[in-house]
Length: 341
Ligand code: KG4
Ligand code: ZN
Picture 1 (cartoon, helix red, strand yellow):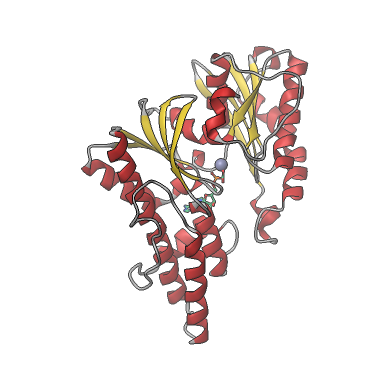
Picture 2 (cartoon, rainbow, N blue to C red):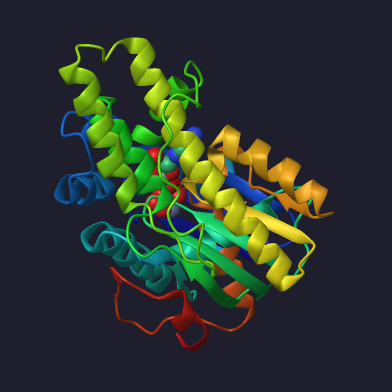
């Protein structure tokens, strides 16, 4: 079986062609980073309009690169949520229409399931069951993954996501959007020990996270240093290093707790923040000490892409899951509801 997949939940327009036997045949992506940079964040209406412009040409080039005609497709998958509803609707409308025209099933995919299954695109795929740390711009979750489609959320953030904490701290440091990778770059030049930022919820049992206090602490540090006239490049790098250390330390310690609790011998790290080098290094070392093997998607498949939507779409198609003729998108879509939707 072979499918086409579309991703348009936020600021990336992406299309992929995936074959059950041969794997990923092509993937195309257009990032809207330049479009939104002047505004310091994603402008939803601009995102939707740009998806409308970009998706169809990306479909054409993805099919051409995969040497695939419409007649060879067995389904069209698209991200149906969660995300920006206008942006989601552009992909849902196009995906549903193409499936109708080509007389194949339309498959609505949960964006987070895409992130969770992205490591299946790699040569060495994770075994099931495993623990997943899902860290993106909108979500921070520890998930017991029993099998594709069977997810139990063990803990999540009560407020900001880890990616959001990176992005908001980066903004306070005057770094351009998207803040996460920029902050990581600046942190590499700083000393992590100079600013000791809070690691909330670590002293409590359980697997919940809270990152909203971090931005207040960073805001205070920035104000104090500015008032003293000492917000030099070096100080900004030290603050960035302190922020990265606090986020990574919190994520690693809670992940270890979840590994102990579940007894799983494999860990998947997925979502945009999974591209963070320090997080990868620390998890690798800590997990190895417990005899746990860590699996990641390659860096380009940590952040949003259509290849992961294709993998999740194929799993759903094989499970007999597809859509009626309606066009639907969900801004919020709890992972727990996936089993019944
Ligand atoms: O998964 P993703 O591409 O989009 C969502 O579904 O949210 O994640 C984007 C998030 C952003 O918050 C971005 O700043 C963060 O991932 N991110 C990083 C890095 N690369 C992307 N955060 C820290 N270090 C990075 N290298
Ligand atoms: Zn994402």
